[in-house]
Image (tube, rainbow over all chains, first blue to last red; front, side):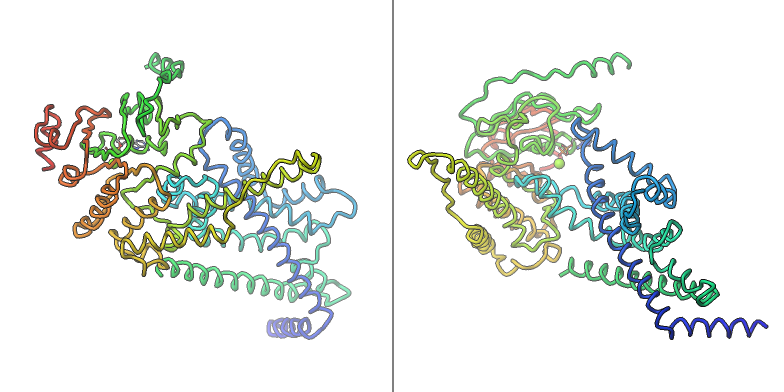
Length: 237
Length: 300
Ligand SMILES: Nc1ncnc2c1ncn2[C@@H]1O[C@H](COP(=O)(O)OP(=O)(O)O)[C@@H](O)[C@H]1O
Ligand SMILES: [Mg+2]
């Protein structure tokens, strides 16, 4: 009996890989998941860097309001569930007819990851020796230029592992979008393939989707390790 | 306790600015710096004239570094003012970056930019300044051209002259950096990263990095304290060379022999004040206060 189920599972997986229609779904899902993740990651890194820079500014009058806004942003985003944030975005903020859900998702995930990434980037910037900034400023170079050309490039090196982990988490989190509506991401297409009038079973397509998530995450993990090693080498040159 | 807090809260008034000495290159006026409750600099007034080599000595924690860092406002004074060539550096309307370009600073821990080659370390600021000016001039010319469109032919404003292109600015900075590196015998290290160099090499590069901006004054904060003993000599030799060329210098140092040899004036700092000063002969030969005598007996 058990052997029968297992054998059946393998045939079903084989069927997914051999049926062009299903593979089209899979590729489309893979592409959309990557697309949403990458766009959200770019937004997240952008927001995260700005928030991190604002948070490390001195506590002067001019920075009070931006600092409060950033503090509120990270507190609220990190203190509430991602799914709820996405629901609010999809069903309230961008509840416009015809507004593509993928774009809503990118914005929601971008804003979410920005809050997490900002903490990592902040730690990375603070890990750079203060003497680097002082040397730049003592030469009469502006604070912004010193930050962009001297501090952030050095901080990034320390940040890559932790930010990389955030991005990996982000890729997996994008699967929630399939709960909201029709976005052909990896999770959603597994539901399509398994529908009663298609393969009529959910286990096999979901395992296939899971395998693809695993593949992306594993590849990314390797890439991060490689970059890390490269960067460490360049410092010793 | 409550009263003290109240007093601190209400006492935000600063000492009024006094007229500065036009003959002085650098002037500290009632300089005071507190870190929380700790008063590190206590109402220091001092003038430094062009060509002087000032050595600052004193026990550790007496505020020497803080005083030096206040001179280019790397540390914001709690009270008092610093004048550099007649500009009040504590006035927020004065562009501090413009002033700092003419004040070189050398740190105890070199602070070379780790993510840049030696050459880039030296050219960064000169190229930045050149490009900054170029961009400003171009923008200004654009504005003039726009306004000229509405003016009669004989009333057009002349354009600002742009003497150097971006390429020339970079080439010039590079040539100057290479000349400086050759001078210290490190031209072959132009393309390596600082982490591969010895402390002595790094500090000499840090010194020429500051010199590349053609400063009017050089500030040194214990330039040899982080070095292995065998490397102290090469760094001091370079500083001496720069001194002999007539550079105005302020050097915080524990190298008493060096201070005696190079300084034109020695300041002894103790508990946030300059308690004694004079020629090296006077300070080292005939110290007056017990604190200075005590200090010298420990370091000599
Ligand atoms: N950023 C800072 N925050 C708090 N205390 C400081 C800071 N910088 C210096 N101090 C304190 O100020 C005092 C004088 O420091 P410093 O000027 O470095 O002395 P010196 O260079 O003569 O050894 C020391 O007690 C030091 O602990
Ligand atoms: Mg010191």
